[in-house]
Length: 95
Image (cartoon, rainbow, N blue to C red):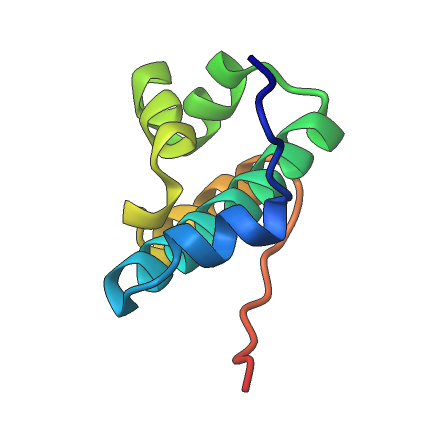
């Protein structure tokens, strides 16, 4: 039996057929983008998570929680993370 393949565009249109599904997809995109920014900040700092946590005066598990679910972090926490890594985050609206 031969299985017919499906393109990513076909799969996306089949799965993203409700407003709720589209919102979920967009939220996941935002989370991945924010995680990529945080990961880049962490990597460029050259610091280990334990060192970053110490600079932020929180536990290492707090850093791990931030990286696991960055959309739940406050702007203040994201800014503190960046500062601890020697960086800054600039928030700008997109229209």
